[in-house]
Length: 482
Image (cartoon, rainbow, N blue to C red; front, side):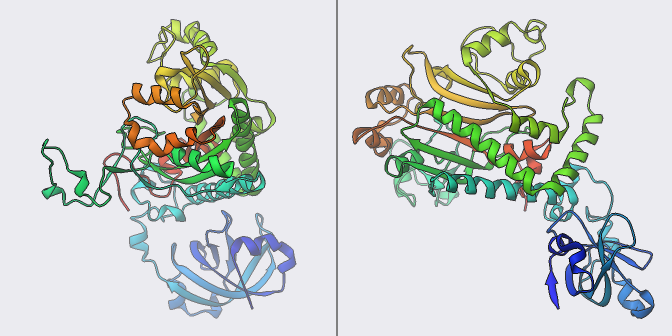
């Protein structure tokens, strides 16, 4: 007797009729003491199990409650009801784990609509809900698609360190890693923490990016990518920020900015199509949820496209490319800016674009994904290549509707003298980056790379509105539950 996952059995459909099978899962509902909706997490769909209650012990049937786990052996038959091709007629039911109905009433396992905030409060149980399970399966598919894409393109997957002594972004928003007893922290003669006595003999942090180490790897391997957790000690309680998130970061030797933009656009289209092709049931469910959510928003905040239309639009259209300078002109002269509808008014060249500006360009002005490039050097990181004008760098950001920035990258500064000037201007200790500078001393080459935040990609593909709902256990200010 073959044991099937629910998805596997449903995919076989009528081919499985008359087979004796075993299925296992959690009870979603038990109607009329006769119909069990069983789900094992492999698909959003349930398998219906038909129970001839006269042939089963009454005490056993009383234990078949919502959230209980069962092992069922039976025969596959053609379903008489609508909504499914097949169902299983139970011949043996084994209770693997009971669930007290009174206790279930206090949880999100109770079969009714729950707020996303309620789901976050019970994050250990939300994998059992349709919405979160669908999001997690889409997330899984996107991650697999990323690895598949880079493998097909000849990239080497490199694991960069999570504990690092460098600040790749130069922003200082990092979590310190220490082995000190914080109640007895040793101090040096200047009265500052003496990190020479710490585990690594220096001040170390959780990484904000694997980029610098990725560049080093690309200088020998040609094309590499990293895919791992990154950390930002930024006190941002927004729907788009996490303290711990996952980043996809390719680095390519011999790539200029145009090649970098081409690769980023191609990657996004590839992985989104991969999800569309492999998550049809989950995306259909999430699309219906997205449409319902839109009807509850003010008219001016609603998406003009359905979720599936939005995904198709990404796949079938070229991204608009324009310089930061062109973007500033559009924003400065927009009615939105003139009428004071931006929280941060655009007045002069050099302004650091906020999410509201990015989304205006994408959602109102162009109504298509946008790649901005050639940003002012003052608002970008030290490692970005300086343009000949001396005031802009070869940076690029990809902006998506509903998200804003989804990719950030640049052509890297390969000229040691200019890199050193920028390191000094940013107040970074040159000696701390001796190893990074060495890549410019021994056969430097033009090279580029970018970072793609996985959670923002999942947000876009699933249509969810809060980044805390697309990662299993969100880490945010004042919150490290589970």
